[in-house]
Image (cartoon, rainbow, N blue to C red):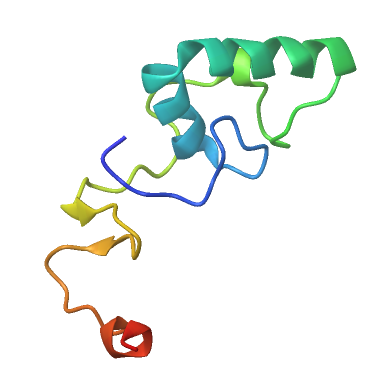
Length: 87
């Protein structure tokens, strides 16, 4: 998904844009949550059920180069925590 996130795949706390990315990259997880919403009769978003979510809805950040190593930081920004990890 071009970014490191702290969300699990299919996190109920994800926003509409997050769920549109999940639909694109992890369709099985998207479908599973959409079906679960209907079984429970409740949406994780007050505005729409996932199976009715339009593909343009939500805020999807532009991809930025990331270093998804131990520090998970943007590669174009200095590592401000580097000194904290030196022994």
